[in-house]
Image 1 (spheres, one colour):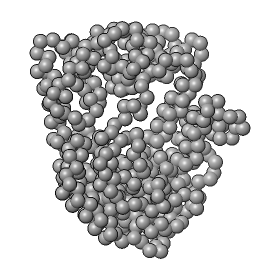
Image 2 (cartoon, helix red, strand yellow; image 1 turned 180 degrees about the vertical axis):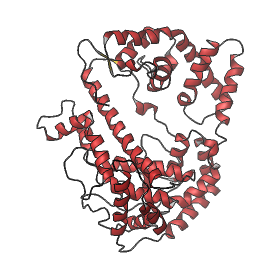
Image 3 (cartoon, one colour; image 1 turned 45 degrees about the horizontal axis):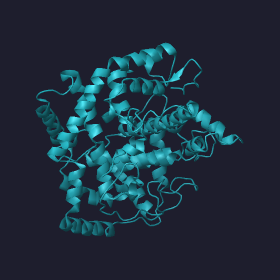
Image 4 (cartoon, helix red, strand yellow; image 1 turned 30 degrees about the horizontal axis):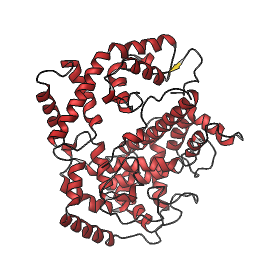
Length: 462
């Protein structure tokens, strides 16, 4: 979808309309608001947009900038929900108090309870007689839904001194038992990867070339992972990219550590993460924790997995890393022509999609413009991200494949692998689009009050 044009005097940013309507509701919304009175980011994402505005039913309200009649429509929807939102805030306060009384500490209360509180407000109105028992039932239901597979349980497990010493010894043995590749020619691996990408990205849609199965049977992912340990040069056919493609900040991946905490705002590169950080991401992102192994079993498996080639057990997932790497080094959203030779149909499909993005067109102009960036560097930094798109792509790809590995969900064929590879490309593209839009909104409304507290202030940590 193209980037919306800049607003005229007749159009207002949707975020500004939401902010004004929220403040007009008056006192009582403090549990759902930031220090300045604006709705929290999660209030907007979890309550206002999906449950009040409902862009799926009101597509005319999905734009970033609204004409006067649409702004009035949005304002009316929020004001009409004022009583329910006040009750939602009261339920959230009650659920947090109940959570503390029960000693529940796992998870972010906003993520866990915001939408449940809106449901309670819709069904029961403001908390009244019997609300305490209902709040307790909701908190217990949410806490029991994950079967004890929580970040807090992981922290307690790794805090045990005896358990921690055992895990440290197992990590050391697993790391010493690796078999780094020595002077291995990976040319055939890259050639087979190109053949798979040529078939999957073709105009007739993804096909299942036999080369994917050949790569799995030949252990191409295992080979490339061991080549990474040995810092084998020339793997991707480009001299300007590291063999690890940003999966580590080091020249060689370090031996994994156990770790004691994690935060989504400061997570290191995938192969530099501790056991705690690896499993923290899995537990935080899982919507069905009851399907995961128990915490002790999760940790036991992660010890071996973290010391396996590419940090993964399953060979089909390792092959997906090889395919992803081959695709990543040919990503060229700016059309500079600096990417690796031998582009495939998959490269052309993804690059053409990126180049149609208005945010990319803006970034392309910025990279060749002699004029200084008027916002002090934010947009310039976003433009520069497009010069090394393989870094963000590989990081997100690895996280998705790691999640599948933890759940024992291999890739059955090339078509399944392409669904993941193409999905990651779309995700990275949409993330960049959102960041550009956010920067442009900030530039177009310099005097507008903030619509939410900074997302970093609400980042998850343990």
